[in-house]
Image 1: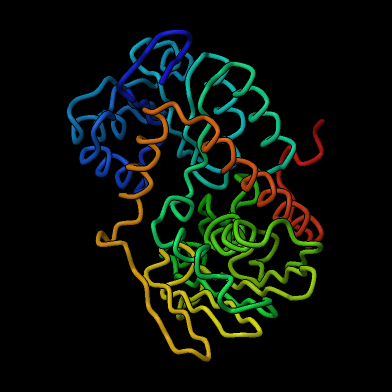
Image 2 (image 1 turned 90 degrees about the vertical axis):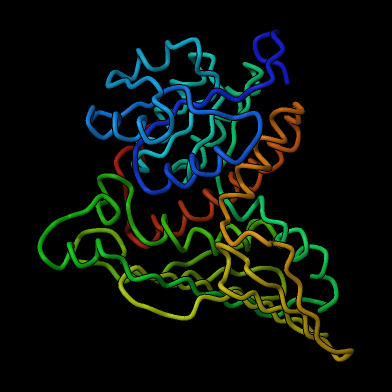
Length: 338
């Protein structure tokens, strides 16, 4: 790839955040050629230092501007609270850094578009880190979808009881349930259901969200109903219950059942009058393995077009979620800023 007119053959990663997802990415970066950790940014020097020590002793910063000024870092991976994604991604792009940003990419569609425009203007990579988009079984799903004929109904569930819900019941307000940080179930795990719907079928004509809210805080669970031309899709997500995770597409000639749902796409079962077939090309159960491997491959061969095509999906996903949550009365700081 090229960056700023210079040929580079290595992703020198600077991370923002120290949570579980960062460890998952760095674990797999260690298995991937052409990518290494160069620096860590954290407001908490102790946490940042512990992360850096675990992955080879990278530099640690507590000042974001100083972190962005490190010439060794050419990619910034953002895994901070949701509300910070846009501001930090924009700062990184303006500093000449390529950006990989965790989901949800932004809270507003206009911010996604602004980052896309800025990245293209600067000739920089901008990657939405949604594992679903990089899974081999996702490609199988797209290939097999025409076999079931015209789609009539889509149903999905992603329920994962969170220990942070226990903390909420005890009187704490974790970021994941705090509207001040753009938290909530729709922005977290139901996001994967919305992403897979939009990646397969495009932006819905209408999306209505029915949330379960904890007082005046964000949604702890809920169901999003999306209307398309000729069919309806219903996506449930919960961080306050357990459930069977699945994604099912029903058509006039058969159905597709996705074991473990939209996040991991562990297995794709296709059933028609001709019989049943089951597909799985993911020998590694770690979904982040495929994300890191594919991002590295796309970047190192300079495939900007493939990266930007995925951002078109991201734009439609965020637009769908933004309208649905705001209509449901879930608002975040900055929603009405120009």
